[in-house]
Image (cartoon, rainbow, N blue to C red; front, side):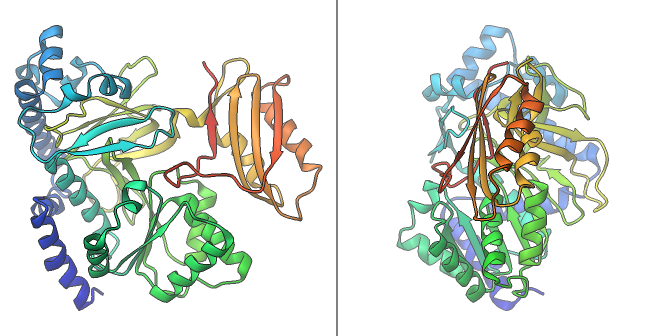
Length: 450
């Protein structure tokens, strides 16, 4: 049941905040809450209209696309169906980095500079306009409300992005206080800090949690080790995003905090791509984002096949993301969700292309093939797999006193069984595995070449 203050925050305080920032998120969210039930044909008609508007705008105002369209003999009028996007080349981070200024529309107003952390080895600087921000805020807001929580409900945010944590000026602190949001730094996870975080969660008694799955899994592990009960706080849902969510993390977090997990998928560059509803479906933000699945060679793949996720964000006239290669691997689903929403589904998000391993013979393996070896060993508290090359894999381990030395040979044998008998496996026991600069934890990193 929504309390009076939550309604005040959701219906007055946050809309006023958005209006002062020049965002149209309230109107867009209301429209999205209607369109999520539309017949799919009606949504497709909306998408086609918006795609044509986007392409006409970038042709007129974005130097990069004006030159590209002329060079390849393309005109926005060539688009008769959304699938006609395949006439355009794929867009890479390297292409944006090499032409950043040419991607800015000459009529753009209020562009804000952003960057990705470069955890894939390829950092990116780009710009976002108010239209894009409004649509992403609205899409996240809609998905939040699927879970019977709303802006203004008490919330704990466990996050590590320098963008958030570096901008806690007085106005932002006031806003968070008004919206009952408490921000905890995910990259400060020392034992004393974790105890403090758990105490804060018990004190706040939030209705929702939001953050990285690895960070909440770490909190849950420590809560169990300390004998702390966290399942009696009335938490309705834990929203996780920005990393792959593994099954063992889901089970652990749901058990310790006594609430379901809602998985979200997206990024600063690609936008708010998909979010899980209470019925389990990972719904695409279909009104805003065109999602394609392509092979390593860039060939379009049909529904049901795994490939790289490519996105076109329809609200990026100011700094366009058109057929943008995310580097993530996923599968689209052609089955409807039992919730009744007509928004199509992502069947599976398998992780980043760098989360896959290359065996000595060239076979591509999912990182889970080695994760399963490590996560079930007694005494393993944390781990990270770094494939330096096809010939060398390094494994970092944080262990407890119950870890048995003979498990080292179990690890080496398991890795060699999957990657090849002659692969060198170095296992290093360390006191701590550092997170990425953003606070994320990557379980698997592969530098091997196919």
